[in-house]
Image (cartoon, rainbow, N blue to C red; front, side, top):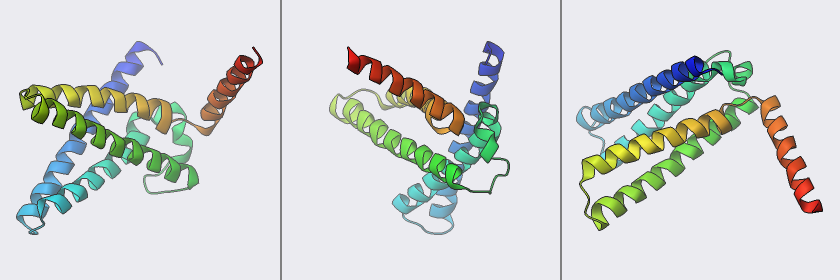
Amino acid sequence: MGETGLFVQLIKYAAVGASSSAISLGSYFLLTRFCSFPFVPATIAGWFLANFYAFELSSIYVFSGSGFAHFTKSMFVWNRARIQAFCTFISGRALGFIIETSVLFILIDVAGLDDMPVKLSSSLIWGACMYLFDKKVVFVSRKEALEKLKVFLASATLRNRW
């Protein structure tokens, strides 16, 4: 992928991320204000809705040229490979949530830093990490993943011989 293609992909990823955040906040607002949900279940529901949306749009719109598209022709067609990709995607997001929350707790509550600069910095850094995770782990074709595995195993075998 050339520089222009990478730039366009980053813009698409940022747009999906921003709209995903809007879905999370919007669903939280609707659930707490109009359905009388407590804030924790509303937050969890918003998180799942936003991440399902982010997975769908990322697979079809952002990473469609990465070889992943061969099993994402339709938004709601789920097969084994798509389910595995979704589980990997959600696992990465859940791990990210735990790490980011821990970092925020340490830097804001323990170290006493101002919350907004810490949250903004953390979000930008974590967003970049999630982009790389999605690009290199989640949205890769089986063929590409097998090739990477073969190269890794071959290099590991060579290292063990020495």
